[in-house]
Length: 253
Image (tube, rainbow, N blue to C red; front, side, top):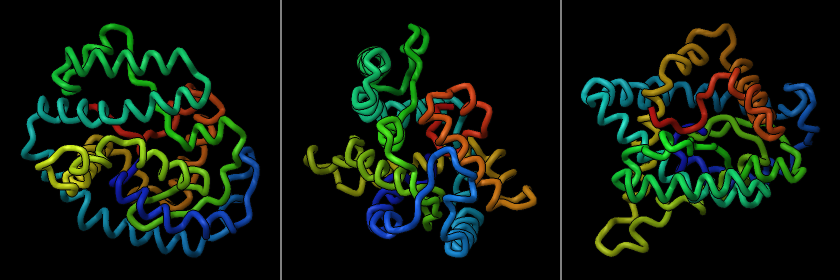
């Protein structure tokens, strides 16, 4: 959801305890009610905007300029494919057997017939990707979202989503690259995560620029989009979630 996912979750680990100590509100509460550290959050958003303006957006623009559309599509498929093991486990933990089996089928089909996930025959066979994560799993089991906060590099999150992000990091195959395959550097996983971040920044460049650089109040806009979309996903309101800008999840476009 998001900037460099590996860095995101590592940073979240150090702030979970701090966030847990903050006051919480029911998921249906007013958006501002969960924002107990707005001064800190605003400062961190300013840091993230500076990082985006000077690092991530130029990298995404360079990636777009030199990478053919077909290659970008294949890379997007590959990044999306790496999320499927975590999606499968989260669907099971949510008690959603049909989506879990569909995710397992998608992973198997795209691995065997889709060049290890670079191609996506599963969608044509009626097995589209069904996004989920451990933050949603916690929400579906009644865990409150906690405090809203903004982390450097990570971006917007909540207490619940920060904890969920740590678990998703543990479920990601890229976390273990270099540890289970001799001859591959452990840094390869971070390189894949960085490439994923650049790819997603390019794919969602227009809507991200609108929120961060063209909206009257980027802080309020980002908080509103993030919290409303996450609450809709936890509530199972996929139609409602789709009406909000999807700038946080991975894309295979």
